[in-house]
Length: 503
Image (tube, rainbow, N blue to C red; front, side, top):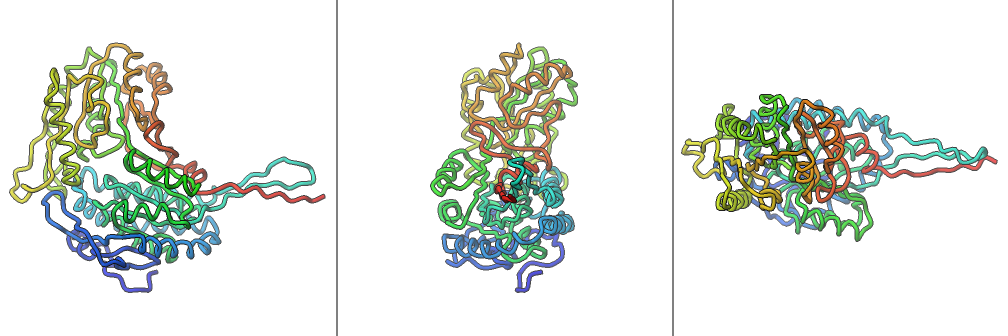
């Protein structure tokens, strides 16, 4: 339990505005809330109203050093804790997070603009599930007996790496944090997380909640900007592993910095995920699946969003019409309103980027922009970062909207005639994170699934990341895997060989 005063309530708080205010100005280091050493802070804005709801501590290299030193001290003792006991403590954290699930859902909706009913509650629930899953894997940190020679006992053991630096994005910050923190802790590492500047609050609250159970210094949270806070974290000499989710450009910077230190790095860098729909599919199920796959309830701010949909020509027009009707029925509005299906874009900068893509697509000869849903009419939301989802048809394969990750509510639908042609088009991308196929011909589906260049391929479904299913991409979508036992063993431990000559 924490032994120093902290500003947030012990019990679940269902008023996200009050909780955001209480969290203002703090990092969480060494078992307690601490203000930034430089005294600087930056605004956390509710994207649905444009109103500041909190101030986040603006971390720098000094804050990073204090956090990493605290983590390094804690790691020596944490590594000595039996693995199953570490797992049991992480499992207890999951139970506590379940008690605070609604609180966390409301807080993440406030700071990111993600709709409470369709998105934020889902994320809050999956976060607890991830910690629960990894909490049960302590006993899987096994070594091997190696047959070397009759008089030599040769075994391998799994040992923690040390201090892990984790840098997370803003679109699903709680989930992506959990995928990094849970396996790292169970494996015997300690962690320093740098949160996304757009979404520092819910992850800070999670850190405090878990520190009620974990020893001080095992899990630390900093907020700040990439160059001033993220870069020093990657470069710190006591950080022995970096795990990052974000853009390709920043991922390359992180990889170069990690390479200078010769430390391992895990990168999840986004995608341009294709969805392939055959005429023999279960049409209604596929339309419903596509509605989920496009992640429009999250305003398309998902690296696994089906942003390229290829539909077999005989059902192309019917499919486009059905998708337009389905999206038109979705309600855009206040993220904290139970009636809302679609919330906001996370920031003004991201909104302008998305608008730029839409304007480019709309101005392309032969293209049609199907603008769907409706802007909210509540005057309180007039300054909110809302934008109507757009389905494009008639764009060529060389369009930027087809080739680049938009991270907004924009999907391109194109017809195809032959499986081989659509496979080539789907694979013609720098990304390779996820893909889905929709067909009742499993022979065709499985054949294409094996040949699609993606780390995760689903047939007749497109679920979000799930615990126990290996997740990670190929090509520019990144390096390494998350969400599985494999991820914990391969990315958060090293294998040591011990040999005993008994002759």
